[in-house]
Length: 95
Image (cartoon, rainbow, N blue to C red; front, top):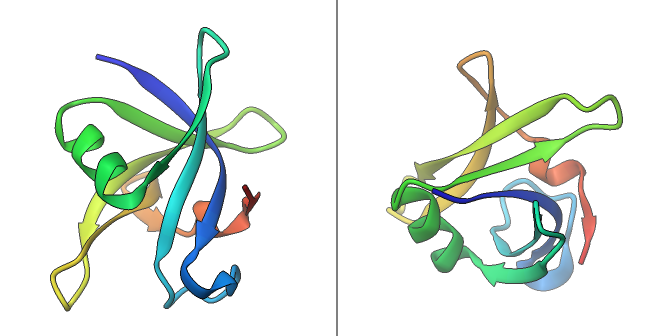
């Protein structure tokens, strides 16, 4: 299976810091240095298919992404560390 580092995000409506607005796109890079941007449904399916995505802080610590489902039934990615879901994706810059 493949692994990518998520490096940036885009939010619906451009309100980057609002945690209640959905992330629409994820920018990523893989180990070969290939870069890309994938929309939310594509990244959700990619993770559900057994691949791995993570966010890395300036110290090299990784928080891996899992698929969550909103109350409205929409699937999205959220990072987790030590079995606790966190908001590391919201700390990334816009793509």
